[in-house]
Image (cartoon, rainbow, N blue to C red; front, side, top):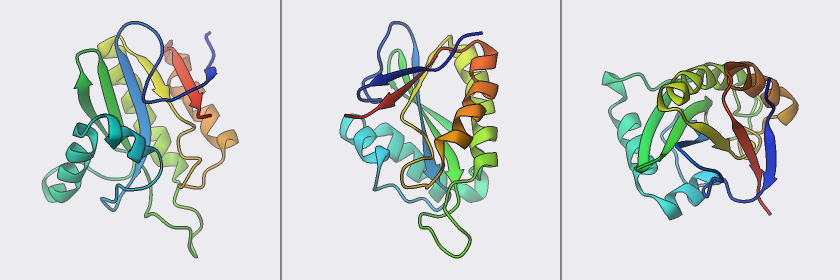
Length: 158
């Protein structure tokens, strides 16, 4: 079985050849304006526009904790907007990250990456503003993506 490749660099400039899928975590409130999403928006407008439309039209679609939306940004490059955090702030109910939602979304990512023949690229998802712990996220990635035989690269930004 393969393992997670860890590199220093920018997850919005994924390394390697072939089709690539960049994965990140969004909230369930339609907010997009802090953290990794800003780096995505600096490179491509499509992921933010698609996410905001997905949230705005939520009465008629599947946006919810655990859902994933796939947005093509270049011929061989996709972005997965995964809804893996409840709200945007730490409060009386704890941090926004929802591990079960990230787990479910990663399951959907595994299927789509397999269909696309894509490698998966990400920052340390769920561990920034969402307040999650990598020690809880990494096993989800291993179970959902690595065990499916998908190449996964995690980027630690300089």
